[in-house]
Length: 411
Image (cartoon, helix red, strand yellow):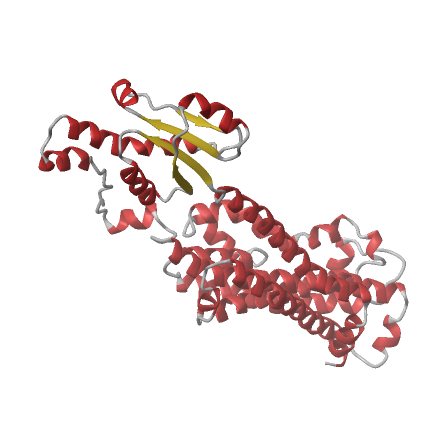
């Protein structure tokens, strides 16, 4: 615990760590603000009022108003006495303005003259087609149809989508993610929360590489080991960077979550305050312990972070292996590839979080098997990392080769 406290205090006083602690959530907030800026601009463009002047010689302005109110178009209707010959000059000097001329001749010809300004909603001419309803009603009234006949003809037709009843087996196959957006969010938000915590802890834990190699470079490892065993030093680093990762996650969530709650009309807290979150966060923590054991062991084999070899570079890429399974898991969360990814220790944490975020019913037997494999793997890699760390932390001048690391493990 002394080493863990020392690592926490040392990093909390480090300007680079403190800047990174706040820069990550600030970047996320910046992206949200960026989206808000352009989103609000689009909303303002959509909500821009269109002034529509109607020269009504058919005495149907009240029906026109009623039709527009029902459609919800952002129109401001006015009656006007301006002649059609004057309309072109009127719209030339106006914005978001239109003139519509309703007269007997237009009713006979079936063509309604509409004059619009240059800068008008591009969908306006589609919207104006809704005025066809009151015009058709007037035509039918002039034809002498009774009120009952008018009601039948003007009622139109409504096309209703039929609900097809499928077998339960077909439903599960064709719709593995649930039946509604709310169900999907209810499963996805806890998984995303746990995934964010895992990434925050793992990325912070990757600094163990630099910590171990830096102590070797500065030749203070021997001084530290004079009062501690290599195992205590290794465990202290793992626990210390675990706490630092949690601090990073807590700060990010504390800064970003209020902004998301403000902008998104989704009961996020309701979805997070469920028992399933404990299991998901537990999987995230197990993922950190696995990778931290590997990082601290391999970090001790490097003479300097800048001289990392291909082997050390490949080890640093291990946390990203679950990305290989994203496509197969999303396509079929219960498929063979998804199950394989759940049983491989390096991909198990990420794949499990993704699968459990997609599935309606959790496969508890597979989850238990995956967790048992993951816990045993952590224990094994902790033992192996201890052997590597014990020898590697005192080796100076070069990076250890895979052959040398294998000899240390067998010793």
